[in-house]
Each structure stands twice: as C-alpha cells, then as structure tokens.
Amino acid sequence: MDTDKHLTDGAPEPFTADDYRARMERAAAEAADAGLAGLLVAPGPDLDWLTGYRPTAATERLTLLVLAAGQDPVLVVPALEAPDAARAVGAPALTLRDWTDGKDPYAVTAPLLDVAGRFGVSDNAWAMHLLGFQKALPGTSYVSLTEALPMLRAVKDDAELRRLAAAGAAADAAYEEIVKVPFAGRRETDVAADLAELLRRFGHSRVDFTVVGSGPNGANPHHEAGERVIEDGDMVVLDFGGLLHGYGSDTSRTVHVGEPTEEERRVHDIVREAQAAGCAAVRPGAACQDVDRAARAVIDDAGYGAYFIHRTGHGIGVTTHEPPYMIEGEQRPLVPGMCFSVEPGVYLPGRFGVRIEDIVTVTADGGRRLNTTAREMAIVG
Image (cartoon, rainbow, N blue to C red):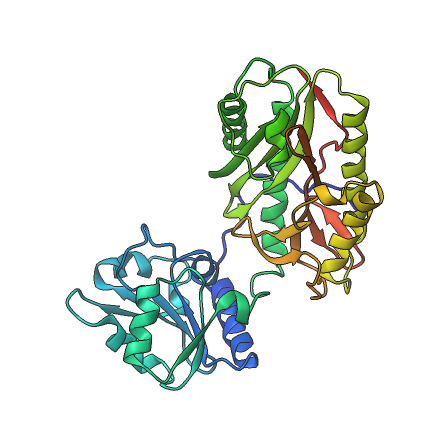
C-alpha cells in the first residue's frame, strides 16, 4: 500500500464545460447500455457533478436535467432561475429550457421524453415531480439512479483524485493539531468545535460532521458530539470530514485520555490490524466484499466479531457517502480510480468503541491511502 501524500498547492484547476460535456455524454451512453430511455437529474450532487450547476436553494419549482443518448442535454429550469443556470460552468454544453410560474412544467418537459420509456431518476428528486411525470406520461416508468447506474460517479479521473487527496491531507492536518488540545474536563461539543475550526483552517469550505464519542458514547458508531464531559481514562472516537474544492474528506482515529488499560490497547491493536488487512486487500479486480471480508476476518478471529456492526467502507466523492460499498454480497470489482473508506470498528456497549478510517483509492497495481496520519493510539491530555 503506497502511502505518499499528494497535497496540492493552492486551488486546483477548475473543471471546464468540456469536462461536464464528457460526463453528460458518458452518463447518457451508460443509461442507454442499461436499457434506459434516459436520465432525469434533479438538483443535488448528481446535477452538480454532471453540469456544475448548483441552484442556490432547493425549491418546489421543477429543475431537471434530461439526458438521453443521441440528443443534446437539456436543463429545464424555472424562468426566474434561468440567469443563474446560464452562468454555470457546464452551461455551454447544455440547452436551457425555462418555464414560468402558472405554466405546467411537466408539459414543458414531456416532449423531451419517450412517452413509453423507462428513465433513471436521481435519488433526491421530489416525489411530487415524479408523480407529475407519471400523470403527464402514464406510459413511462422510473428507477432510482443509484439502482440503475450505481457506479456512475464511482471511478474518479485525475482531477478528481487530486481534489480528494487534498481533502484527505487537510483532514490529516486537522488531526495532527487536535491531538494537541486538552480533552479531559471539556465537553465533547468543545472538542468537536475545535475540529470544525481546524478543518476550515486547513481549507475545507464545508464541515459535514465532527463525531467525538468519549467513553461509552464511543460504542455508538454514529454518536453526535454531546454535552458529556470527557474524563481521564476515556477512549475517544474522532470521525470528521467535509468538503474541500467540492470533494469529500472522511477519517477516523481513536485516541485515549491518559494511559489505556491492557484491554483497551488490545482492542485498538485488533482494529488497527483489521484496517491494515482491509487496505491490503485493495487491488484491481478484487470484489468490494473482499475488502470487508479481509478486515472482518481479523476482528472475528480475535473474538470481537459480534461488535463490528457496520460495513467496512463506503465510496466518497462529491458526497461523503456514495457507491461503491465495502460489504458482504457486493461483488462488483474494484477499478482504478475508485475511492472509498476502509473503517472497521469494535463497539463494546456501555464501555468504549474503537474505529480507524482512511480513504483509499484503487491504483493500477493495488491501492493508495489518502490519509497518512499515525494509526497507533495517540495519548491525549
């Protein structure tokens, strides 16, 4: 596993209209290969990734990208938002079609659709809009984009990988600073606020989560920082991330306030070995489930299998959770350019938890960690 860090200097080169045009063409082609008449993409991460257009606010007014092989991409927008859409980086690759309040947006959009087609629809589309299309075009049918094209955003190009590497390096820098602050006698929310400030200091434009799970709270994998006062002798799970240059970071380390017990060291070492085994299993052609199996086997063999209660990993890109998922039953092969977390954990109810997480990208001959901070247990004050 190659662990070199690729922290870019300054902001990366912005994506261009040609970049977005290529993404839309590929998405339309993949939809056709999947037997779909096209894709209907509502505001959200898929629209942002495909066009560079991010509406200022999600509203009840229909905004929809229509993609189909053999026809130009069309973005249907409310007339009052058309000027903003026209300024999007990907706008030159689009045809804009606007509609005004009082008009039927489905009547405007219907001529763009095959009246008997099956369409992939982005997961965050409003139910009222989908029902509107079903009423206007009763011969159409729909499937979620994640179900139809789960790997659409999974394989990153070099420009995306550079952004993910920079986000990972910034999160690492935040971790290297957080272990220097006082923990004992402070609330979880205090340490979480420090983490958020550090992520922003090192370049994050958005902080999505700062989990600080101390003592028994660490046994809840999705514990949100609360008012519990961290005590000497606590194990503390730190899980934090957000967006930098539009791409996500997500890393976990588990620290200890003062000297740990022998059992705490042993459990931490088991999780560290499991995480290393999961990372070592990353290679082109391996199944996603192989990563989960490799990490889980270490924890199972140590007798803690019942306390590893979540999947080993999830994809990351313009969102912090997206396909592919490292879980038993997921047989899709790993492909160079995929990025995902490897984050096994052990959670002992009422006592403590341990989780260690890196983002890993698949390379031509293995994998590379995008997080490189020490995985050994850090002792904090």
